[in-house]
Amino acid sequence: MSTSEPIDSSFSNPENPSPVSADSAPALSPPEDWQAALTQAEEALRTKDDECLRLRADMENLRKRTATELSQARKFALESFAGELLAVMDSLEAAQQVKEASLDSYRNGVELTARQLTSVFDKFHIQAIHPEGQRFDPNRHQAIASLEHDEIPAQNVISVMQKGFILHERVLRPALVTVSKGKAGSPS
Image 1 (cartoon, rainbow, N blue to C red):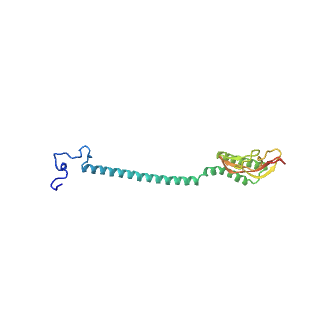
Image 2 (image 1 turned 45 degrees about the vertical axis):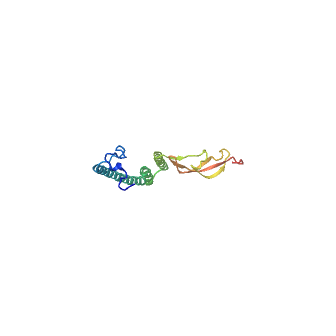
Image 3 (image 1 turned 135 degrees about the vertical axis):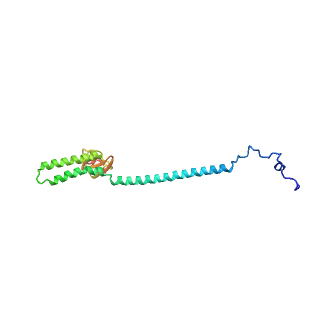
């Protein structure tokens, strides 16, 4: 090959078409269109960044507001219950102020106060556990003693020494009970 001949005459000859067709080459936009597209993309990015910052601020405000509300709810959760108990306390204090009263008037006052307290308990779903004669349940009862009993089957409650209480389905205080071992002389 000599240096005077061109390597590929198709590139140097305008009459001979190039090996790459015009249809297969990517269409390039003029530089002005690129600048407009870049400006538009930058504006869209700024808008999304602004939306993201606003969303973060909203979430932080929501987190703070929720924390404050939760703190207030914990602090004042017993407010309505305590308010209802004030009437019971007033009745007890009124009974203490009476100088000369009969045994019957004291009894009536105590019964009235007990009804007030029971009403408050009912309003707030606090119920007494009355397990006498029932099967012993270690989730609701605490056995203080066990006795042999001819008439009550083993593992049943014979007597209640102290009532238990539940709030909805949660035990506030288990009932203190005596449990039967069954008949004397028989294996349990």
